[in-house]
Image 1: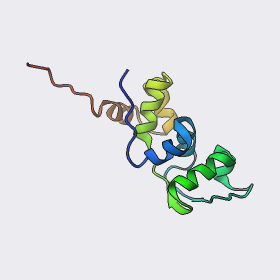
Image 2: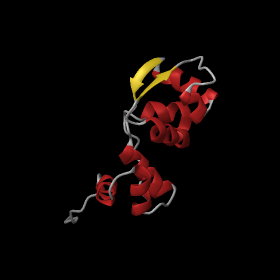
Image 3: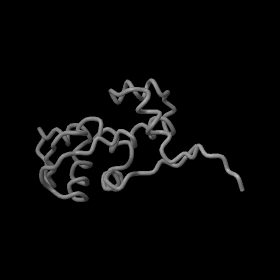
Length: 117
């Protein structure tokens, strides 16, 4: 099982709230703007999705304010494949993409060249 490399743009989320909540956060908000606050209201979509404590931790790690969330699809695909054991097709359906994209994301970093020496 290959190590899952956490991309630099995703690492602050993982540091603040762990991989599982990061994946939930990215699936819910990836590609859109969110507002983070160190004192989130009960109606905060972020607090409702990942919990108030995690929302506060994320705001402290990244900073309060509005920003666009990275989709993180290659990272999520690797997590689903290697940590959760999902199939390529199941991953493609979960991420609303093609199996070709998932295969490409998962093959990045894998060498297909033969070792000669």
